[in-house]
Image 1 (cartoon, helix red, strand yellow):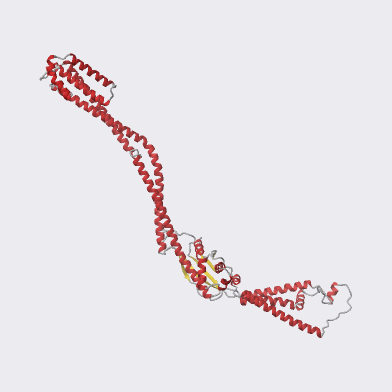
Image 2 (cartoon, rainbow, N blue to C red; image 1 turned 120 degrees about the horizontal axis):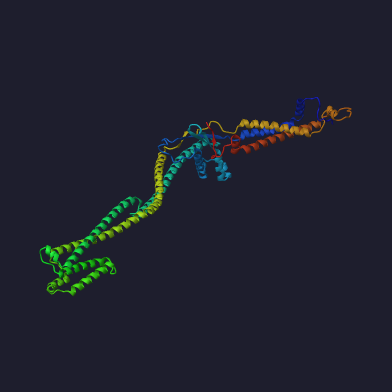
Length: 558
């Protein structure tokens, strides 16, 4: 057998054509198998239909300068929250059961797998939000993909309605919860403020008169009391001087026995006993007053007792006979009234003046004592005022901060109530369906022409690779020139291929068997393609597009 690896002088095209002519069966079979597989997928894969509903985000109708909304979340974050609620397991299972979605998948898969499949079939996409420029209206679409166009339309519209309703419910709930929270905080701060106010009131009542705002009044009162004290002391000094003068005058009358007095004045002449009795009565009155204020060891009390004892001894030593009888009724009257009544008007006037000066002195003394007590009280108040001011400042500082917090919370509570009312009237930021999902007019996948083209390219590639591999492994010579090119031996002759009738019979039998095998293989490929492609929505979705999860949004800036 003559073999050759290559033939010099022939072009690349000639070699390719020679190999194709010689290996046409080997190159045709892989191409047929691959193109048949691609065509089977293109024919048997189910069609998917996508329906889209467009939702626009309407801005707040009332300017925020008048009513500021308490729901200030970013639209993407808000949509993420709503998606977590709407695409929850319970919500999706209810939609799946209402529309009888994924019946075959529910028979072979768990409920979690079915829910996850529906999440993959649902897509949310932002359409506009240019933050760098003037704010524009934000819109987004909700798309659902399934094998039935009408079911896709109904499910997309139901999901869009859920987003609108859930946004209203979320905003109302959030605004109400904000208002309730501020109300509870306001009640707590009000209770704390009332407690601090009671504490301040109790402190002021407890230290009344020592408060900082009473300092000027205390100073003025202290000045007035000091002036009154000086006046009372002056009155006492004058009363004491007047009493001393009157006492001296009565002592002189006692010593002279009333002779000089009688010489200048008409009337009965006071006897020595009357003068001594009057003097003794005055000394005893003065002693009584002294004992009411001082103890028995006080020097003035001792002096008065000595004078009284000396006067009584003098009266007892010289009792005149003529005056003894006249003095008896006076003694009895003294015992009865503790004081003789002299007959001389001058002595009566002196004794009355002495009594008045004694009373004035007692009044002045009591007033001085009272004023000194009051002066001491107001001095202590003024001395304690700085300490009370510091203590009150500590209490008032907490009260001031609490009051400011209360005012702030009061204003915020009012704004939150207006915001809650705004949301209840649905005049805040709302979702509105501008384009409901309609019946799709063309399928979203698969791209059947693309699948057939991919099968054609893959078939050609597989055939070319297989032929090149076989040619590389084949080391036989196919012409005399190939032998002469690689072997340095003389060639005597060539023997042509002899085909007998048996060879033709075997060739025909082999051809029929090969044809049957190829047909069976193609049928197996078509059957496998149908089994794989029938209702294989996941593979169709993978070939058509790759939808992101529902909570991850594709953002397109328009």
